[in-house]
Length: 603
Image 1 (cartoon, rainbow, N blue to C red):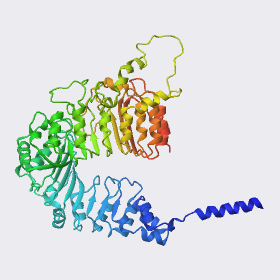
Image 2: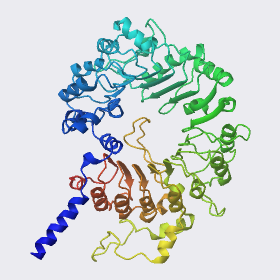
Image 3: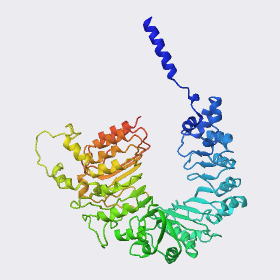
Image 4: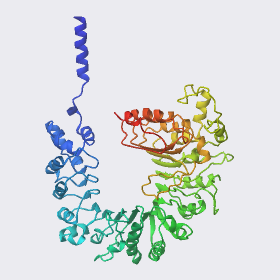
């Protein structure tokens, strides 16, 4: 009886500790419900009880609906949801919902309070777009694709009125066309993505001159932001010049952000030269990016004016450190407003005024120190695709300087930049000999695998004294980290020209071992990680540590890790994946086999 009474008492205590979800405050429940997909929220959770029936219709949950990557949201589910809350939706994102039927997309027209609509990746003809936009009188932001057969002449007058009120337009072009830009007379933000193929499906060569005969040209008089991203191809370069030609006639007075992202180089025309001369005189930039071919060897950058810049990109430009400092500081002014700086491939940006830099040359840490001191609020920094070597004699390491950027959320570095100078000389002697140079004997081969010896206290202290370890400790809020070899080129580039030649890794990158990469395990908030061309990785034990500690990791990209023909980290990678419960995107490029990865993804 005593045992039975004890069990009853324990059960009563446990019951007293249990909390009914409906007993929580509305604020807490609304926060929890915000993580549930909108279709499940309206069609399932709403029907559980009266309290949830009320909370699920709260404006904080119905004003914004995101269906992107909600692959379980079928056509009937979306239609049912729209019948219930279409009058409440102010922002709707159905981008990349390629599985939705045309009739389902047509139901978007019932959301008459829409202010922002994203239909990127959905098949929308000019007639369907006209039908959808006719009733959306409050729409101010639109994202669409322009595919073959699109004809702006088929748009109704009501649709043109809606387009005329737009403040922001994101347009992805798969054919040479102005799309709906000529109808958007009040645009303040224009984002263009050029994805036109050089040839049609029938093999005919595409020509950008097809768009010249259209009745109208874009209106840019109210434009504050112009952004263009080009996929590889001559046709995309031809089409973007036609868009820029209109800008050269009259530069918008309120233009503050001008960004063009081009793979490789883009030939500068007379119209673009006139445009930049006008902008240098009349525009104060807050965000700026130009193709490298327009800046290299030009005095354009020296005449550009920046007013409280927030985003600057000099990707692949031959900008010297002195010119960069002069441009950013504008007469010894600080640059505290700058949150994003892209110096990818800028080989001269951290050295003094010299016309050429050898890969083995050291950087000028004083220039980097001045740069970081002037931009203390950087959130995104890209220094990849260049040899940034810290001097062994100066006593100052690149990572030590970067550790002052406590607000960093995104960082991209070349592998050789984190190398410890004291280890470089010892690396070659500790590397295992290659099969071609080792003596051939009949003795039993030594099995190379995970290290079984315990790390000494002295080795632990050396790790803690590493500049890279200190950097990650100081920037523990990092969400995105890239360690990419200076000579690495992807065999599957997205927005860069394809390069078939492979280049050997930088000599300094050989000294970056598993122990150094294990420092990443300090980043508890890390969501995206890229590791490319790290020849010093052997067993991959660092990957296991990262998988255990970085529980928020969602994107993992690996390429050319380990020495050629000596990939021995696959077992560690498979074990790492068992800990990555939130991983969504995995990319493994290069030499590593993928036979065992599928078994690790069964969770």
